[in-house]
Structure formats: structure tokens, C-alpha cells
Length: 306
Length: 253
Image 1: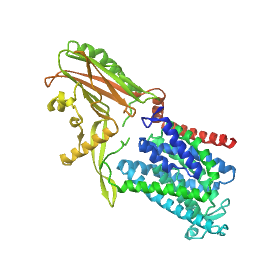
Image 2: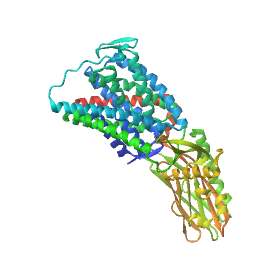
Image 3: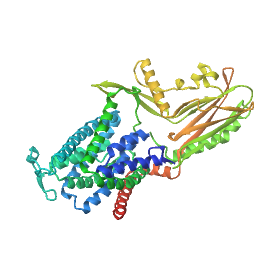
Image 4: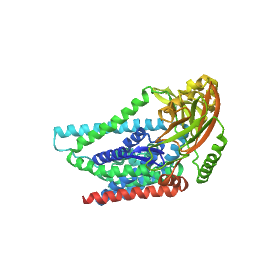
């Protein structure tokens, strides 16, 4: 059955969209990350204009993050104070990001920046995760007792001014740091159309030294608001949020996510993380090949700038 | 691209209605008369593309060529260049007044019906489309950008050669299907029908067509552009609500 998308101004197969949304929801349930980094390229591949794909994705991210944030909230896994510090940066970054997005679109270099960002960030995160999980698997093979870990390592980061106490996370660090992380991820999520969880989580765990469970809940909490800010800004400035496309993707995600998390409960965590690392890394390699490989047509028709 | 407002749309529809009244009278006694089964294509939520019947009659021998041209806009074509091992968008040429949709067909392949001069005058075939540019590049270079633009439009299924065939029923009546894909641009279209005899145009007729969103689809589109802030808010509320409900439902299951 075909569905005409009023903002994208094209007709697409509704089952294909449900399958896409469901597949991404399944992956996010399985791995606990948004999966937006896979959805944006797929929507573009289906023929949705990139501008509409990125903006609508922000809307879809809200729904997925609300579900996750509420369930983490109930289990007390959200550090509100940290979330607020990240959010302050997130609002600033995403607002600036939409401006940068509009500028890059006018310059005709948006697709290049999107591809390069994906290659760099997915490549780095994927490689780090892969290294980490391979080490964890090897450690488990050697001995069953995991070594005692320090709460976190003290670095230059702890010398920054404006120190604040984050009780839930048991941290006493500068507020500048979460603000900067929130802002940086905000800029990228505006351009890439993802929630930015795949960047936010490593930053929170490795830079801030937050416990993983709290990092997941807190990042979901702040993503809800950053994605809402992005949706509103895109709707106002570019009119590229397709409510019908978002709704179909959300419905697909709602069905897919619980299936994914049910499966996740049965699989060993280390292998699961290694699998996610492989997917993330593979996507970045694919994008890098596309950038380096000679294009089929050396000329491109740029999408219109409203 | 500027979207047509409701007023503009009403004017266009009124113009179409007026032509429908006047055209048959003007065409009386001419060697060619043609019309469409419908002058308004409404894109609704279930839209998958449209077919419109073009029909008409000719007096005397000759071949018929039809061109369909969609609304125009500026298009930017860029050539990819290699910088430090990766391909980036390099030099650009902007073309003005590029039809977003273009189709040509005839009772025979169009190039067999018209002379190159005629094809040039009536913009028959993508080679003869008038695409203006203010670029100061060499003409040969501009031609390469132009060819690339046409290739891209063909890939999108919006430039169509030989879109089906125009068939004669007997000696006088003819019919043809105009096919519009699911990604057809909205706006005013012009359909030009030519009767060609011995390489000369004997008679010509131009008919308008308007393609626009209708029903819920049109309302959503219009609301998103008119009340962008509230549209954004509704999108957010909808997403939050769905996420919330989904969480509540699956906690119980």
C-alpha cells in the first residue's frame, strides 16, 4: 500500500517504512542506542529528500527516547542535575547546529559534511567499542573474576572551574564539561539528524566518568528535549518535518523495540556490544568507501534550497 | 520553491476553467482539437501517481507531437572534484526556469515527425529545452552541466522520452495517456499539442493542467507552512504521546 507524504511530497510504500522503523526499533531495543545513524541514510536511500529525512528523524527520536527515558526514570537511573547541565549545552548546540545546517545547505556542502562526520565519529566510536568488547570477552575467557575498577580516573578534566556536585552520579566535576559535551553533540545531532546517543554515551562514561546505567538513562532524558528543540526549529525554519513519515516510523519502532529488548535479555552482553561495534564500524567504512570511490556520475543535482 | 497559496490556486483553477470554455470555440474550424480528461490532478494520501487521458481529433493527414512541461524552478548542478582523496562538490552552474517535469511523445517517435528547426522552436526533446544560465563558463562546459541536469531528472523519472505512444483511432481521432509518477511536482503544467504535416506545423493547441495536493494531505502541507510553530508543537506532542503510551502498554505485557 502506498502512502503520500505531504511534506516530502512523494509516495512511498507504507510497509517498507514500517519495516524500516521496526528494524531500527529492534536494533535500539537490542543495543540500547537510538539507531538514528542507520535510519537517516536508509530514508535517503528510499528516496526521501535528505533535508526531510534529517528533520523528521529528530521527531521520531523523541518518541523512542520518551519510552526509554520513562523506564529508566522509574528505576532511578536518571541524574537530573547532570541531565540539566547537558541539556543547557544541548539547547545551545542544537540551535547553533540548525543555523550551521542551513548555511551548509546553501553552500551545497551539507552531504559532504554529513558523510565526513559519520565516517569520523562512527569510525572512532566503533573502533573504540570493538577494542573494548574484544578485551572484555578475552578477559572473561581467561578468568571469571573481573578486576576491581576505580570509580573513575582523575585527569586534566577535573581541574576545570565552576565545579558542581552531581550526587546521583557521585561526581564532583566542572559544569563546563557536561555543557560542552551537550553543545558538541547538539550541533552534530542537528546536522546528522540522530539523537547523538552513540556520541553522548562514550563521552559521559569516559570523559565524565559516569556509571554506565546512569549515563544511558540521563542521555535519554536529555535527548528527548534536544530532539524536541530540533523538531521545532526545523519545522519553523525549513518546514521539513513530515508528521506522517514520523508517525509511521514511530509506530514501526514501537513494535520493534520490545522485540529487540526481549532478545537482548537472552544474549550475553559482551557479544552484543561487539556486534553493535561491528555494525557501527561497518557503516563508517561503507561511507568512507563512497567518499573515496569515483562516483557513477561526476555531476550532482543539488536539492533545492527553499 | 514558493508554494502556491490558496488564492493562487483558485486563480489557476479559474484560469483553467476559462480556457476550457474558450478553447473549444477558438479551435473550431481548426485542423487540430485536443483536450484532457481532467485538468486538475488532486494528490491525496493514497496517491501513487496519475494517468490522464489526452484526446482529440485532426482534420487531414499529419502526425501529432505532444510536450508536457511542469512548473519551473532554479536548479543547481555541481561537478564533483577530488580533494585529498575524497570526492567533494566542486564548480557549480545554476540554471534558471528549469521545468520540474518534462515529457515528449508523438504518433511516431518525435524526431521522425519534426525537423530540427521545429524541434528547436517548440522545445521538442530534452536537447531543445531552453535552460537559461548566467554562468560565464565556456559553452562546452555549460553543455556538460546541462546534460548532467537532464540525466539527473531522467533518473528521478521526471524527464520522460517517448512517454507511451499517441495512437490514432481511425484517421481523425487520437488518444494518449499522460503518466505522472508518485513524486510528481505540484503546480501548473502546460501541454502543447502540435499537428505536423510535411515538416510544418499545421495547427497547435495548448492546454493547462494543475497538479496540487488535496484533502488531508493538502491541509497538513498548508498548516506546516502557515503555522510552522504550532505544527512543530503538534509533531512534538504526538511523538511524546506515542512514546509514553508505548512505554505504558509494553510495561504491562
